[in-house]
Image (cartoon, rainbow, N blue to C red; front, side, top):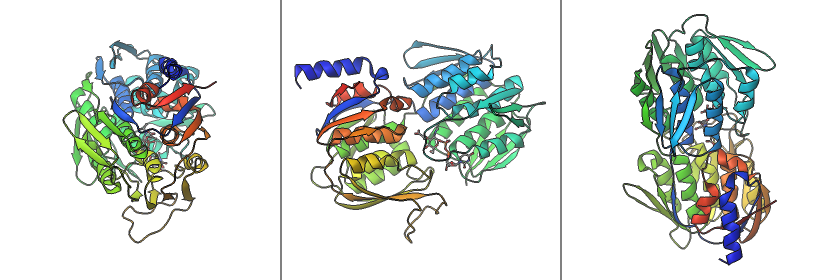
Length: 455
Ligand code: EPU
């Protein structure tokens, strides 16, 4: 790297949070090591769980991502004290909790969907809650009907207005039978966070059982909850009167680990992901192996690398756990543009999660998106009405382009595409990626990527 290039990199690394556009010079394998800390999709929920307690909680392994900042802001708006004396270790003290003005909640909610999970804990603590219009990645309609139906089943009263939804619990919420129409991650968390302090027993059927949910259950058990995970997606919760604070290290971020694994494959690289856990990535690892990617597992993490030579096409169906996660498909699609032959990705969880492929096509990839999905007798995951499919035919060399990040996972995929592509790519709106990937530019720098900050 030239001294000027190094200086530009250092400048970019020094202020990644402010960078909205980054210019990448691609075409080199990513080689080196990255670390992953706590999972975004657990940490943010664990922070909400702290609201249920009478005493402070300590959460370890918290990544420096903007979704954590959003939840922190919302907790602080409700007079929960949040301190971080040690990097990545939050102490959350809910003893002063009180209602917040809706304008303040709205201002803090940002683009996150987490506010909806505040409902149960706030109804228990204060008898009322408010949720503004929800954000989150634009990857489909993302309705909240399962959440609202569950809250009603517990006895919450809901009133919709132009500002959002106001909820009241005139008396203590009561345990309920909740059967989810789909094993939704968020709705399962909603039920858990509400049922643990409701009066009586809650039986949740068709629950999501993602590792992050099991980790949330572990946290709630530490707090004093009684939760039984039964076979067939059934969870039984015996409500208790009160809960205490927890001390917990968050499960590692398997989505970030899978993203770096895909980056190693796409760029013909070799990345050791410190903190990656085999148990939570088994389905991903099977697909990685079928594609021809190599991995070595040790006690501290997993080394992911390209085998040299050609990699293989594959058929993927995204699904709820233990299926292939929807959050893994976008980075893998970039790697599949380099496979010899035709791959198919059936996206069954969200109805609009291939928007990011437009940019890959612009960069030279051969990807066709089927908006109605593709039926096939070899399919294992039941077809959903809104699913889509992408057919990726490779290998196609990628070339640099000016592209705009659409959402979190799609955005990481754009970055992988930019570093895979020969030449210069200007990637704008890159700040979104900090919602779920900490220190992105520092990590890329450590893996040998050449880049500089744009305007
Ligand atoms: N759904 C409904 N009604 C509801 C809730 C969900 O119809 O009330 C549908 C959704 O539209 C979707 C399906 O159920 O088709 C699954 O949604 P789910 O509720 O499981 O997703 P979520 O809880 O909103 C979490 C993660 C997502 C991850 C999904 C699936 C968080 C903050 N988000 O979303 O993560 O893709 O589970 O595992 O935990 C990401 O990290 O980039 C991300 C989008």
